[in-house]
Length: 312
Image (cartoon, rainbow, N blue to C red; front, side):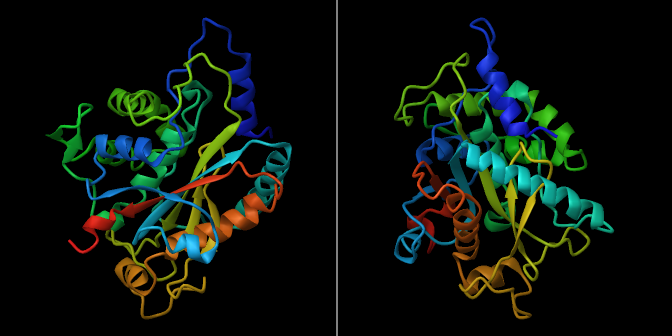
């Protein structure tokens, strides 16, 4: 089966001058992603922050706690080959599994009609799977002019997730294509003052880079409850067939399995506020950077509570 990312990129290259991609691309810029997040209900005391490198000292500079990570990576032949091997492994694992794991993840597929919307989709994946960190979505939504306005539905992204909670990933992707409030918020952030580069046109060529998100997959404990014990790092990429499980998220900073004492997400983050970041950094090194060791076109952002609000 052809890699969906490659097919989307090829489709964008084939676009003629009078064909338009409906979604503008988000620049890999924490301010742009934060503007989009706040406009769809991300609490004002949370935002995206640069990850300047993956060594211990640079990771320590990232604010705490961290709920999710977004990676921008180059679409190179080496990456496509690695994705093909991974896709085959995922297919074999799926065939061998007696039943799908219940991790409560909200995952949607990216369709070619989105155009260059992988940044928006990565942001949707990251925020919608981090409600556990900030207690749901805020009812205060940032207006395009910097004003704070009240949302009647508790945040447009939260409303979208609730409306499509039982839908398939493919149907969720189709539904996002028909979500004007989310599209408007994405386009506004992409073309806003925070963007440091000229916004590519809707008719522009493929950018040859792609975003994906790393989130905490929380076991379904029944009655809507989700615990911290057994938490897994999940990679969410709308061009892949399913979430990619990168293994347990440790609460001790050493990448080990969560111990019996961590019966909640709060317990996990108390033991290591950077548990998600540490696990994501390990996955990025092993599954992306080692695939293209000479390539430096990687960029990471972390979804964190803003430093000035950490003690609030």
